[in-house]
Image (cartoon, rainbow, N blue to C red; front, side, top):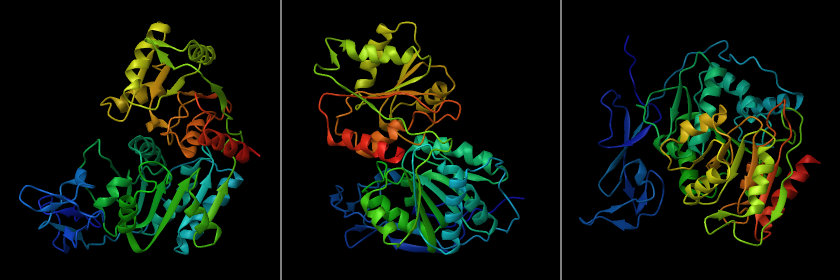
Length: 424
């Protein structure tokens, strides 16, 4: 029997329509009063024919004056179920409390902030609430700013909800849109939804490019139903979210312990006077630090601030460590997913990366070096998250994090202070 696709809770441009959709649609002007109706940005740019168009959300298809957005008004009635959760793991007492807090907030239709250290097991704490939502016919979205985190979360949710068809959407893979009850996607993909979700979970809410992004905030607001609930998950919430939580405007749960009870790794700080690379040679002190970590026979993640530096470091490190398996990865790397999987499976000893791997990914027993930790790209939350890649293994709770810098910044100081504070 062919399943009718109605694209419930979706919105799209005329010309992107799907012939299998129903006709219960709302038609709105794509641009109204110089505002893009998909992303709410002020429209400033003009085509040669004189029509204004939105450049901000152009990656989802150009929208200009005279275009129309179609918004599906269909609401699918998902049948009630007894239980859909196939995960058999156990939560700690603290995790169970957070899980119960979330379930209560959903039942009370109240937004909620989960403030939990990296490695606390935030994903597992969601399972009971998501199971309740799915079993009672609600639609659930899990959105995160990073593609790599979507790829990390998707198989974990597949394993936890084996009988549920889960949608996976991000800009590096193409799938025909369906009416899945549970969807894992990037926050950019939320701009394709309209009043779709009863429960929308924003993971890593403080992460680039979501943080302080008015377009993505608008997309989130548009994607949730009028009586829907939003959960915010992060290890480093911004001031505005904490104010809402502490003034009791939204629910709040804090978890300062990792799931295995271990503490967060405290960064070692290493000051460098001379450049990290000069005359095609890496600073001998940096080579020494890398060599010291490699003697532990554990994989090493080396963070560098710029994509153009990846091949430079890779070439020199391969010369210095000729017997090691070394590669680099960044956001524009077409083999990015394969390299990350290979590193996780132990096929590489050292992986050079940009901030794309600062959060939401787990590698067993990994050690970390941040080169140029004083670069403006590294905020306090990103440095905390990078440090949080270490010590996530229950059988190996400790590890090394090294911040290398020329100038001791406020961000480095605050990152270490926050880690020590959570450990206390």
